[in-house]
Image 1 (cartoon, rainbow, N blue to C red):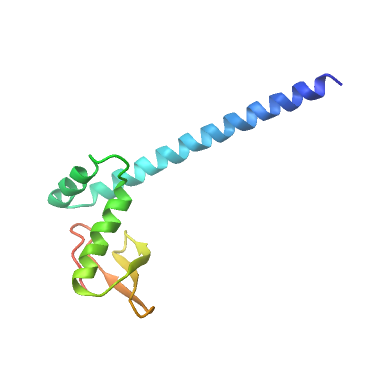
Image 2 (cartoon, rainbow, N blue to C red):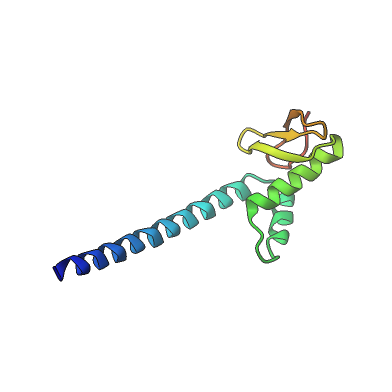
Length: 114
């Protein structure tokens, strides 16, 4: 009977190690995605994002989404981005009346096309 508690403890340690490893993998994936997002930007836009990243807690995707929403709001009265396909340059925004609208943008400059 003493082997069961040891087995349970070993299992708990193994599960904990797996969770830590999966967290490390997820963190690496996010870093790779961030690098890909930055690589697709124009040099000017990339420099702007990198400048904003100097503030603590800033993530590339969040910065890009904020910059994009600001550009959209300059043309349309949008409340928020509800869906974003950055690779295809399409954002779906919620308008003040609750309707949704798709907005096309340039993925290198974040300039609004439609």
